[in-house]
Image (cartoon, rainbow, N blue to C red):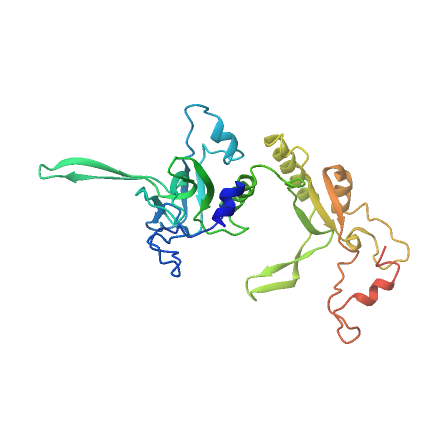
Length: 323
């Protein structure tokens, strides 16, 4: 694989990897002295407790100060620390001029590191006070493999942080690993959508009963006009605070029509416009988007009927319940 990367100038990205180094990842079938095939030029140190705020350390070139800022994590505000909320390897550069068996030497550039720690105490026999600063360990790095002529033969973007879709740092870091490894070349397009779906508009919901430790059908809450006014106000404030990304933001209401009519069992359905909630939604309809969430919130996954009386499937045959 490394030969393929070298010959065809293909980059490698490791989103959550072990910082392998000499002594590990050896091909035991290869009798040569140098048979290490995986070497990121790093040594594992300690694993700090989480959470903590990692610091961006993307270097600025002296020749072209904007180069790195436009090629590595260019969409991230690197002036702010990045919260790391899950386990990660902390690594340091090895810098011993050894490398994998292709005779290249890994050169490590740290992009994100753990916090820098400073220890103050007495040193020496005179009792003078000294300060020791420990640089943070690497979390995200670019490793360039150089040959004897100091030419870069291949590159790896390595993260040693555990990742999952629900972690903030994964959301922040993930895109760049694709962008970097493809060198910004994509087939198709990438779009990011921000939406918020609120289910069961017009219906009441059961509340939690602290005495029985479960929801109680006798304790219910249904939205009212004050809730709608509050939603409009908060949404307007959000749009104003984020005029670029949030200017067109709207809440998506998944509604159930049975809660918005005078009689849901009537042959001819009539909207209950005198109802406090219905009137408020109609008055502010331009502020929201709406999604059909079925008329009566039918349970259609508990067949067969009539063996299971909780299934609403048969009621869907009536005009009133499919309107």
